[in-house]
Image 1 (tube, rainbow, N blue to C red):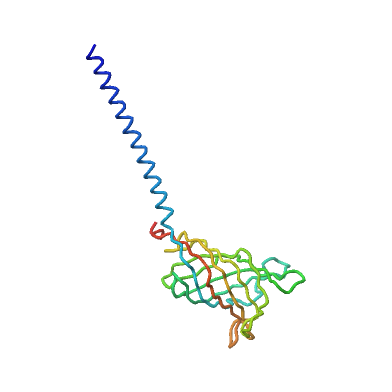
Image 2 (image 1 turned 180 degrees about the horizontal axis):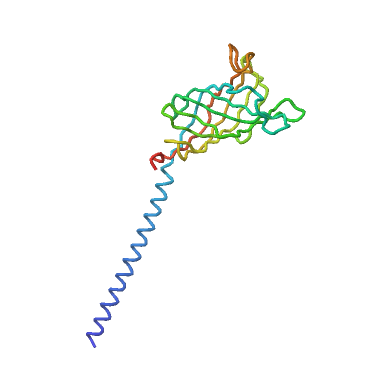
Length: 208
């Protein structure tokens, strides 16, 4: 009888020990999963974004209508400059559609119809889009500018170290209408002075 009791006690102790180990294992696994989630979310870096650049018309205005029979037109702009976290920009590309507000000269509505891009000196690209914006008459004291706009650019990924990037920036842009078309001594151009923005990057994503 004593032998049976001793055996039962031993068996009960074994079950309790095993149950505790299983519970500890699951607790450790849950802790590791939480740590992994925390590390993945904290690996993103939020950086201030600033840029100064100029873009010029890459095609004559009105070369192609956004919608057949409408007064809207496409415009392609290309340029260069510099930006934080990209350095010297070897290329900037923007393709958008503009359409005057009916019966009103200003504002002029515009929107990107192709993903824009900032190309860094090493070839990495930061992609962007402006879903909706408005161009207004310039009322400042700089005689070089005739209209301006300050809409939100949204960053939507890219290549290289900007793969998976996100964020935003305010354009703060000023347009010089020019007198000699796309070329010549007084061409059409737009100056951007971006002082407000945030770039969120995922370090190491380029190697994935």
